[in-house]
Length: 124
Image 1 (tube, rainbow, N blue to C red):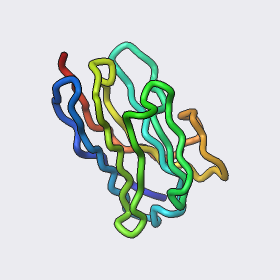
Image 2 (cartoon, rainbow, N blue to C red):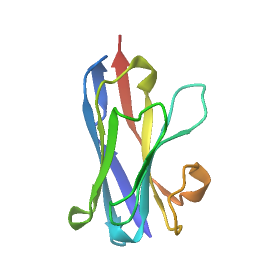
Image 3 (cartoon, one colour):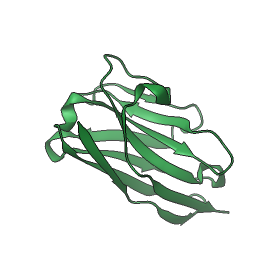
Image 4 (cartoon, rainbow, N blue to C red):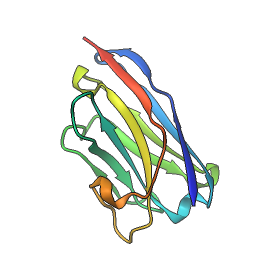
């Protein structure tokens, strides 16, 4: 098992940047593929990014390609989401999640463990 706690959210002006962190405890982080999802009010939870166990492979939603970067530091049991060039449509509650699957998944159903979320609000 793993417990996840997100941090780093906040209010930022359009065009600005934030770095989200997800700290893990319990089983070592390297056991899991890690992903970020977000959910805006009235909308479904959406895939944002994912990173393989070693950090060598990544996947991104089309809407964030070129702007967001997911990374992990297994020695610190932490995964990050660097968000640049933020847009108002990025406003959402951001969750990190852990998957024990063999391959990276871009759907939320494959992720077993979830954090409580951190709010990101982008003003225009």
